Length: 105
Image 1 (cartoon, one colour):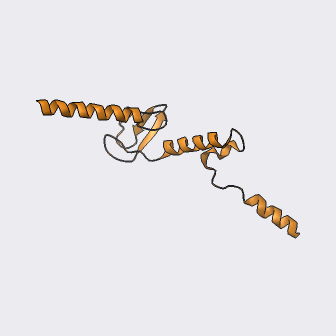
Image 2: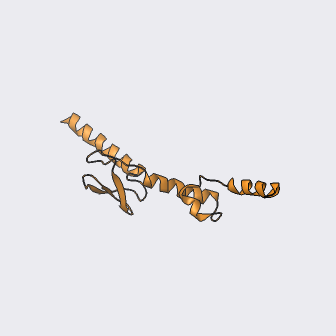
Image 3: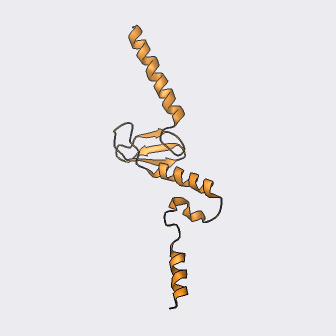
């Protein structure tokens, strides 16, 4: 094998090996869109804690439907994450309102 062929083989093998889940798109759709897809899919596939039993066994069953694999607790959440920032804000405000009611009584 000539030296030029070796250089070409080395250059061809230096491609990005850490493309993540969006690597299936190749060079299409742009860098930002592929990065967003990769981030969303990595968040979706991460381990999530069950709000009922506390284990890291929550999986996405459908759009906005999450279920614990251990206790079977099924609940609604975000499309790609089990809890959304809006839902967390509502939970905080409910806790605050309940705490104020307890102090008044």
